[in-house]
Length: 185
Picture (cartoon, rainbow, N blue to C red):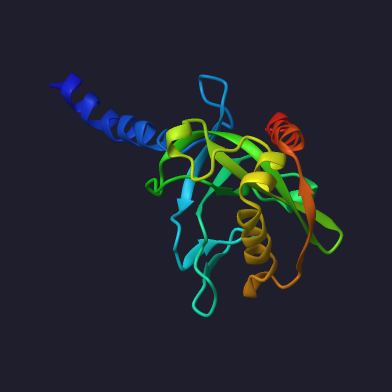
C-alpha cells in the first residue's frame, strides 16, 4: 500500500519531467544538429516579439513563414533574453514541434547600440524545406525575394519601431553566434 502511495506521489513529477522535454532546452540534438522549436505558424497574427512580449499583428502582415526560437543564455547583446528568434523556411510543421535545422544566415538588427540577431534556418530534412538552400549565397541566388520579404517584415514591425535592420551575415557567422551563446549556458 505504501509503495502505491509513493508511486502516486511521484507520478506528477514523472509526467512533468517527460512533458518538459518536448520543448527544446538544448541548442543541439543528440545527433549534433542545431534544433529549434516552432513557436509561430506561418500566417499567424500573434507572435512573441524580439523582446519576448506577446504581440498581436492586427494592422500588419501575418508572419511570412514559420518562426521558432533557439534556447540560449542571456548575454548583454540579447538584453537578458533566453532565446534567439528565427525564420524557418519549411513546410508547415506544428507549433511546439522541435526540429533539426541548418543555420543559413543572420539578419542583423540594431536596437539602440545593441546588435540583436535574428536567424534564418532550413530543416535538416531536405523534403521539408521551402527553398533548398544551405547558405546565404544560395538563398540570394535561388530566392532573392525570400530574403527581401524577411528584411521588410522584420524592419517594419509596428511594435519594434526602435529596431533597425543593418545587414546580413552568412551561415558560418550564424553557427559561430549560436555556439557563442550556447557556451555561456
